[in-house]
Length: 196
Image 1 (cartoon, helix red, strand yellow):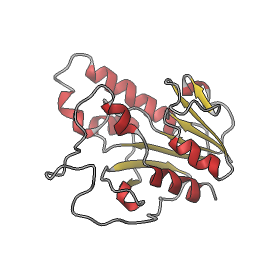
Image 2: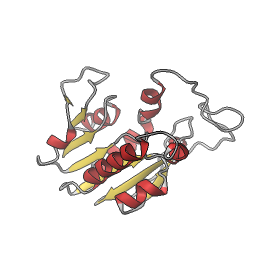
Image 3: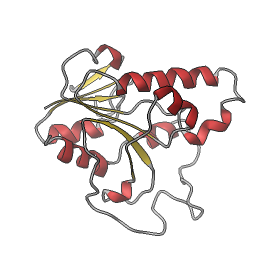
Image 4: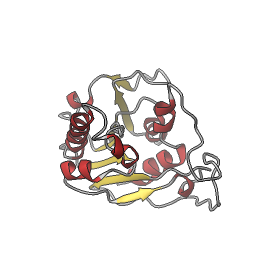
């Protein structure tokens, strides 16, 4: 299967598919963390016209996620950036590729209105053997919902404070650390969607 992992610099999902023998490529404006020869540094829009069987996309969520909606009317230019982000998300979702998953955190209603549809599924890392909580929404086209592989039930996960918030403190690369796909979820995507 020829697989495009859009907006991925870490290589986590790409590696999971390649380990199962798929012709998987990641693409991002950033270089890959693992310096892989299977990473294309550049604009993914240029690759959407090529022939792919499956695309899994991780577009930037900064202006789309519900957690930042209160900044929309407070910071100049943020609404325009939200619109651009939502239109990019929609471009990925509507690409001429038979099987598509676009993932993002829980999204606010203004972005959803532009995209024109809601997510099909929400997954958590703890459903896939990871000691972490982070709701991730999946918009699916031509794919079935991911089935949990190894559910870990706890009151609190390793990435949470006692109040349930993410305990990763402010830093210059916090966004990069938080955006990396958990390996358990990447493995489930490759194992389940790689068979279709």
